[in-house]
Image (cartoon, rainbow, N blue to C red; front, side, top):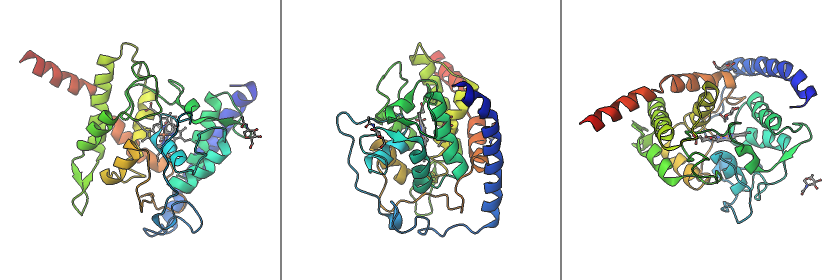
Length: 283
Ligand code: HEM
Ligand SMILES: *[C@@H]1O[C@H](CO)[C@@H](O)[C@H](O)[C@H]1NC(C)=O
Ligand SMILES: *[C@@H]1O[C@H](CO)[C@@H](O)[C@H](O)[C@H]1NC(C)=O
Ligand SMILES: *[C@@H]1O[C@H](CO)[C@@H](O)[C@H](O)[C@H]1NC(C)=O
């Protein structure tokens, strides 16, 4: 980070927190959108119609983030995933997923900072977002650790399958639903397995929070619906007729998101997984 960025960062962080909290309050006061009415006319996803899905081609840049990759696969971000401005990422995130403007500013700004670029004028390729131990970390649910599989651009279909098949909830129509407990258990198992299989494994409170935060979007923006998460996590494709499940006027604030993330992270219990493995091995 440059000196100017270092000096301004605390002020920007406080500004974003206050802004976010105000949006949280506005969301309480203002009526939410009705299902099916979130995405305005003329915008990608209006009426459940997403732009055409084209899988990445040789040479296209992709990241460790399934949802950002999906935006590029549908041409919401440039299909080649290159030369994207941080400001464009902010706008597109907001329009596509209904994250609050505070959130949509915060994450691209955070990314610009770790890439040592200016948020205001800087550009990046999607692959650059996968910088190890910036946001990308060990023990993820959709990617093997980078020390084992260096290419973080593609999902690990076996891991995704393990995650989704453990959903214990059900939707009113009987389709499977991923719950907070399912996600905590999946994270516990992944962290246990990653510790065992990756000699270079690292973990920190900070990265654990990122991990549960990134995966908690499956419960909020996707409402835990496995039928929607399947194309998103395996092909990085928007399901037909999909819309964000967060319908608040100002979208998902960081403060509201915390109400999902904190219980998910608190429910992670790697020791319990370890003990149950030890017990089966002893038999
Ligand atoms: C500027 C915006 C974003 C950036 C820079 C970003 C970056 C990342 C990165 C680097 C990872 C890999 C983390 C890991 O090692 O597990 C990741 C994972 C993930 N992100 Fe994002 N992301 C962004 C926005 C989003 C949005 C809008 C969603 C959902 C709507 C989302 C959902 C996820 C999910 C579900 C994972 C997978 C977690 C896992 O494999 O355990 N991200 N993101
Ligand atoms: C990236 O985009 C900017 C703005 O459109 C353009 O001026 C620049 O030449 C592009 N760079 C590359 C390498 O394509
Ligand atoms: C993913 O983790 C990063 C780590 O800083 C965090 O800034 C970001 O808010 C998370 N993204 C989502 C959509 O949860
Ligand atoms: C969310 O929780 C984290 C960890 O407790 C805290 O640092 C952060 O300030 C909270 N964010 C908001 C917007 O409340």
